[in-house]
Amino acid sequence: MTDHTDTILLPENIAARSLHVFADGCYEPNSGEGGWAFVVYRDDAEVASGFGGVKQAANNTTELIALLEAVTWVNGNVTVETAVVWSDSAYAVRGCNQWRHIWKNNGWKKISANANVRSRTIANPELWKAIDDQLSRNRLLTIAWCKGHSGLAGNERADELAEHGRLSLGGKATR
Image (cartoon, rainbow, N blue to C red):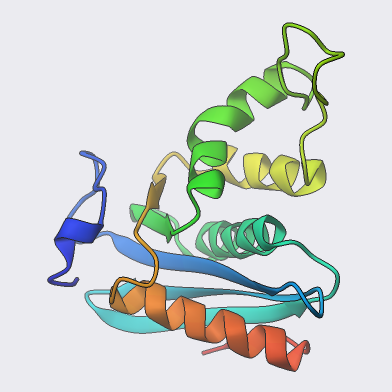
């Protein structure tokens, strides 16, 4: 897909001919506006994308929306093909691959030895529940981390569309 393999952490189970989806969010703290996007590649060709804007959202929220939109697109459009959704958000990737299982088993709350020390509430619980629902439907779907702003074409394209979504705040799907 790219010659920047040194910037990607590849899970061992990713097939070379998988569908690759890049999800990204952006956020402007002064306005509180954000954007999200995903871009779908098959055999190095862009085959689909989607983007939109969000008012009054934090950066992690836009990253989660991008990821949710990406996995929802995969589940609605891909039936028997392996797919990898790439995100440059370590928070989103760890949440999908590790934390959501713990949170779900704990009633969508963090585990804390002393509940008085910190909040047990997770941020964006409705988004996490929706992501969990989508990921639970598809065993051929992998969530993986990629380094952002490193020249990786799919991530750069998703970043560009997320910014477009933030600026337009209208949102639309393309192709």
